[in-house]
Length: 101
Image (cartoon, rainbow, N blue to C red; front, side, top):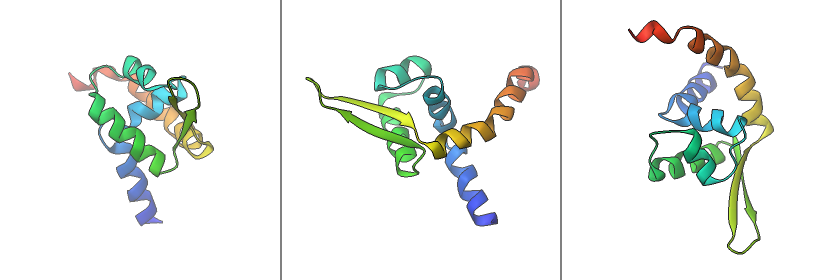
């Protein structure tokens, strides 16, 4: 149990991972949508986090056969269940924004 908890915390705690998951839950689908919802993240790091979260089965990558081809990402059920668990932390952080000062 402790090992799986530690692995989960490391995945979510990695820089920008939680922001990418939150953007996915708020409707981001295409790369440009994620960029618009996550100010400050570089293209390289966003690509890396999308691939990592897909590898952890938290996001699903879909190839839309259009011209040009579109790549979309959406939360898996596992990713959505993780965000439901993190939602109280999101609410707490919004209420306690001043803790950095």
